Amino acid sequence: MKIKVARLIADRKLLVIIVALIVVLSAADRNFFTLLTFVSLFDHIAINGVMAAGMTILLISGSFDLSIGSVMAVTGIIIVLTQRFGMLASVFIGLAAGTAVGALNGVLVVKGRINAFIVTLGSMIIFRGLGLAITNSHPVKGSIVAFQVFSQASPLGIPLPVFYLALVYAVVWYVLRYTKFGRNDFAIGGNPLSSRLAGIRVDLYTFLYFVACSFMAALAGVMLTSRVNTGSAVFGDQTPMLVIAAAVLGGTSLFGGKGTVIGTIQGVLILGLIERAMVIFNVDTNYQLLLRGTIIIAVIVIDALTARRRDGAAAAAG
Image 1 (spheres, rainbow, N blue to C red):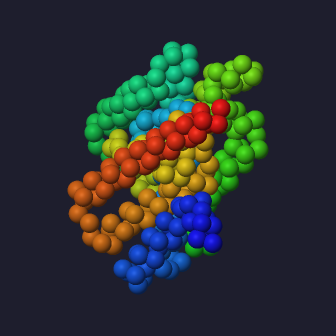
Image 2 (image 1 turned 180 degrees about the horizontal axis):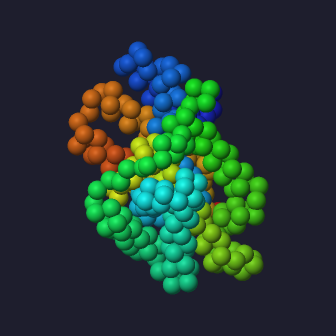
Image 3 (image 1 turned 45 degrees about the horizontal axis):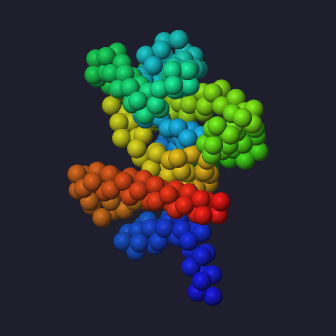
């Protein structure tokens, strides 16, 4: 009986952590355990959650993208600067520009055979610098009031970003589970050479996974810009590591071939609850950064140890 309980806890460890955090926060703040609090929490994590869904797709394929924070920021800046063409046109231009960064990253990785870390680190710096240059290092204010509806409206008392989050995860879950695009994602991440020999167009799909990841970051840029009605090059400077940590915490492997968006949203929620806990317990801002960094390192170390143990078990079985 004890073994079954221990196994159940191990299999549902993310849910156990979430419940434990909710219990602790509810005990510390009697106003925490309310519907309004949880709606606010999901609204708060929606932007990182959308990016984490895109990052999950890319991580499963065995790659990652450090430029998503810059993509989010530049998308917002472009939307604000092109609003003279109309609201819908500016959103389309912003999404296209942000997605184009993923296309550039994909081409450099696939055709240039350059390591994804180098490519996306370079893109992160270049587009962050571009954002600072075109705004003269100052935030730019939106001019279309109606644009704020994208993230500030609350139909049925639920903020629109929560609906976007749910829709994105439903679509990505379906794509990964039931489409060729998703099946090839796992195959390429598990063994790119075997995938190539099996007739999978590895280069094409890897390119598409980079594009999908950047599209999600650009979509997050639309959400953030609509929420604050401002574009700024400093937005999202810590986002890539937090998003990767959330996906890995949710069970997606940094080494590819393994992951689910169900786990990713749980990872995002855990990090959101931890952030809320730091506010409730009045943790100093500097120590908040220290704690976030510690969590990121811990998640990466655990993922590396798990991958090593899995490879060892596979070698022993072979």
